[in-house]
Length: 323
Image (cartoon, rainbow, N blue to C red; front, side, top):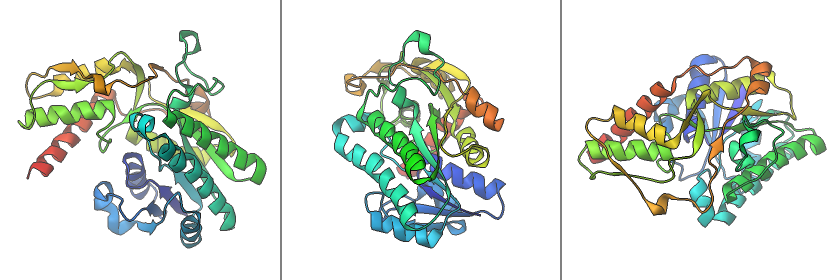
C-alpha cells in the first residue's frame, strides 16, 4: 500500500508518518512538500519516506506528484491552520485551503486514480454554539466565526461535492482541539508552554502573555488523532463525515494552570489584548459517538501526559535554539 500525506512536515502529518512507519509495515509513505517546507519534524524519518515537491495552489504540480506517488490513500492535512492569522490574511487562507483542496481533488481525477481520501475539516466550522447544542453532533449547523473556519467549511463541502458529483472516495473529519509535541507556537497551549520554557531558561521575564482563558475545549492528543485518521480510511465509507475529539473538557485557563504546575519555578500570567481575537469560539464539546461506533476508537493518552510532553518538547526547542 502507498499513502500520500499532504502537510507531512506539520505536527499532525509528521506524527501520522511516525505512526504508519511504526505500526503498518509494508506501507510506503509519500509526502507533499514545498521547497521551503521546514524539515525538523521529519528529520528522524527522512530516509524512510519519499517526498514530492508540489504546491496546493499549482494544479499541474499536484497532477505530477500523484502520477508519481500513485497513492492508495491520501491524508489531506496541509492547510493555513492559524485562526488568528486568517483574520489578517483571509484571501491567502481561502486560496490555500479551499482552492488548494479543489486542486488536489481535481488532480486525483486528472491522474486517473481512485484512492480513499481523508479531507481534514475542523470543529471550527460549527462556530459559537449554544449550551443546548452540546455535545456537538455532525448535524449541527455551520456558523463559522473566522476566515479560517469559512475555509474549512469550503473544504468540507468540496469533499462532499466531489463524492456526489465525481464519485471520489472522500471521507471528512471535523477534529476538535488536539495538541502535543511539535504543536505550532501560535496555538494557545503551545505558546503557553513555549513562554514557560523561555522563562525557565532565563530568556524572557514573567509573566506568560495570554488571551481569552475562558474558552471551553475538549482536548485530545495528536498521537490519538493520527490513530483515528488511520482507522477512518480503514473502516469508514466514502461520503461520510465524523467528529473526532478527546474526552477531557477543560477551559483554556485550566490548561494554563496545569502547565504552570509543571514549571520549574513560579509562573505568573497576564492578559495581552493583542492575543484576543475579533470573534472567538468559546464552547467546543464534541459528540464523537458516530466515529466510535464506526471504528471502535477511543483516546488513550491522558491530558496530563499530553501537556507534559508538550512542555518538554518546547524545553528542547528552546535549548536547541539557544546553543
